[in-house]
Length: 144
Image (tube, rainbow, N blue to C red; front, side):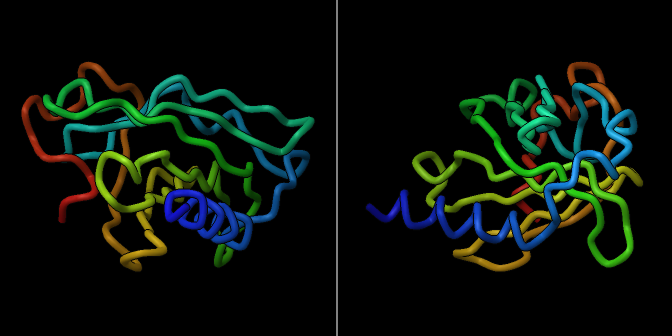
C-alpha cells in the first residue's frame, strides 16, 4: 500500500512539475539515452508518446553494479521556472531503495532529483549516451 501511495504522490508531483503539452515541446532535444555526469547511472530507452503526453524510459544502472534497472514514466513537460523541460519522470524505485525518485530532465542538459519521501536529493548535468559515458563502478545519481 505504501508503494502505491508513494507512486501516486510522485506522479502528482510530476504533473505539477510540468504541463503535458507535447505540441509546445521540442522533443528533438532529448536523446534516447543519457548519463548523469559524474555518476554511474543514466536513462535509456527513452520513448515519447506525444498523443498521450507521456514518456517512458529505463533508469539504467549497468555501469553501477549491484543495482537493478527500473522503469520510468512521466509527462512530457513544457516549462518549469522558464526552462524548457524534456520530461518529469517517476522512477519505479521504491521496492529497491525505499524511496520514490522523480527526475526532472531538462533540455538544457541539467537535471534535478526529487523524492516525496526526502525532498530535493540531487541535481547536475547530463551527457548524451549511456554505455560509454557512465562512471564504471561509481555511485548512482541518488547519492550526493
